[in-house]
Length: 191
Image (cartoon, rainbow, N blue to C red; front, side, top):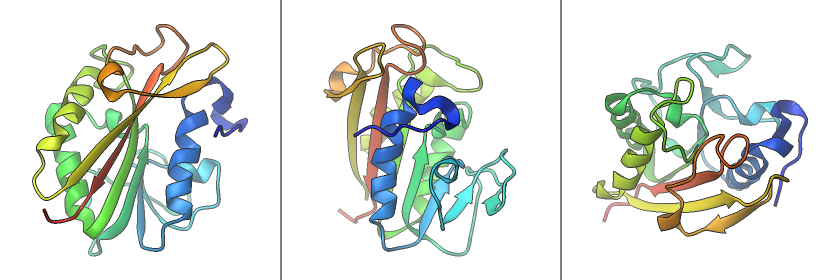
């Protein structure tokens, strides 16, 4: 399923597949929701907590997600192509530790990141993020799953891909923007 929208020209980038995947999860959630990075409100009407360090908009909490410490926990946390911008490996670790802390028992974290084997793209730490995502299955007390999609044409067509064959995708290499994305799911169930 593809999502076509003029904002951020989704027909030309990875948002065409990221948005419908994450929106379906959000739309079917019945609990409290935290979104990391203000993305969904540009495309849908949202009624959940949004934390974004830089974007100033109505209803958006400007806070560093590495240290964000609300009183409540969340049943669902989502993030679309945002976590790769948090910084170096230390900050990447901090953000995932904090997000797991913010999840209620039985809660789920869903995130997307573009696959990027270069060290830096703009303010992202692509190779460090990819290496960290590969190691996430070391978390105790969490169920972790990775899924992948690969761009297969200049017309921005995407296919599900084997996770073991996705890590070599470049960013702005074969196609403009991402050539592959990772969809991650961490469920906070005690093992």
